[in-house]
Length: 220
Image 1 (cartoon, rainbow, N blue to C red):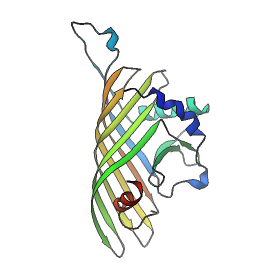
Image 2 (cartoon, one colour):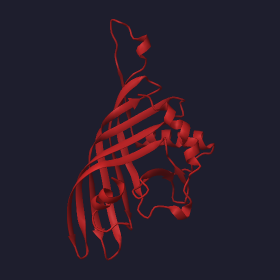
Image 3 (cartoon, rainbow, N blue to C red):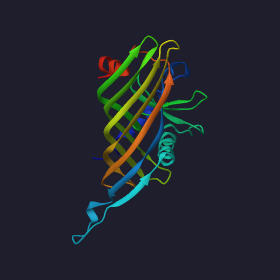
Image 4 (cartoon, rainbow, N blue to C red):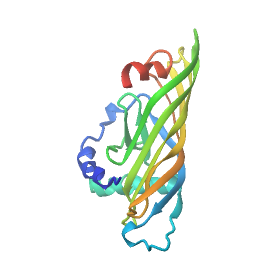
């Protein structure tokens, strides 16, 4: 598996950058991501008498460097300082944004999905709380400033924890996951990514009751 081709659509996707007026009322911000990439650099040059894989770690700062650099390469402009990644649960998409209204659609660079949810929900007249187990997938792919291509796919079990205040029309949601998937480091030919991540957000939900019901009826 190699994801270099996904970046071919990134420049086109960038043309779909959101206008400020179309911002999600419930953005979930990527607040943490870290892990390791364990790879084989080149199978064609492996010696018959032995080989050794290479493991490197990554953190939030390094991931954001790759994402913003790929946006720069795809769009031809530098993203503003302080930009961050957001997942929109209504449009089921991700974009790069900041506090001043900049938005750039991250198709082919960052994707996130929830594929299955088992929910526990407690509701009352004032709102309620939700605690779910779910399957999550986060993919990050891009060229770093060093000129090399990187991929980290984290597939695994996660949680959705939420609290709802119906009087204030407000919800607070935290989505966390960990797992493993395909990994690529410095144009390597094959590898494994392992890591964890967290999205957090507070806003006015466009659904009534638990997010899991909205996911079941609309997204699934």
